[in-house]
Image (cartoon, rainbow over all chains, first blue to last red; front, side):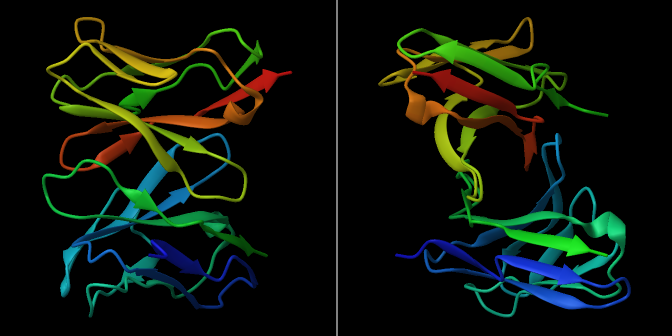
Length: 113
Length: 109
C-alpha cells in the first residue's frame, strides 16, 4: 500500500492563479481531510469528507474548494491564489467514524508570490 | 481560541536522557488524545494515543500521561535517541482533531 499520496510536492503560484492539489489514498478509508500548516502553528482543518459525494467545511475553508467523487481521491482547489495561502498542505485519511488515528500524506509546499 | 497548546516551541536533551513534551487543552469534552511525530519534508506520523478514561499509556520507549483535572498531557521518551529529533504535535479528538503548535525536539549525541 502506498498509503496517502499527494502531488505536487512543491509549487510556486502567482497571485490570482488557480491550481488543484491532488490527494489519493489506497486504504479504502471513508474519511479524508485537508489541513494547512503555517510556521509555528498547528495543523488547521480546511475541509473534510466522510465519504464519496459528501464534503464539509473545517476551520479555515475560505479561498478553497473540494470535491469527492470517489473513495480514493480528494482534490483541493485554490481558485484565486493569495499570499496568505502560502503554506504546507497535508491530506489525511482515516478508516471509519470511530477510528481516531488519521494517516497523513507527505505534504505539498505552496508558495504564492 | 487555541483549544490545544504546546507552550514549548523547542526542547533539547542529551542522548539517553528523558524527553518530556507537554500539552495543555481547554475543552473538557475531548475524548481522545494523540501524539504525532513529524520529520522535515514528511507528513506527520502517528506515535501514541490515550483515551480520556485512562491516565497512562505505554508503548516501548514512549509513555503518554493524561491529567484530566489539570487538562494536561505529556509524552515521555526514555531513553531519548538522536533519531527521535523531530517536531511532535499533540492532538485532541472530539468529532475532529485539534492540533497543538508543535514542539521541536532535538536529541544531541
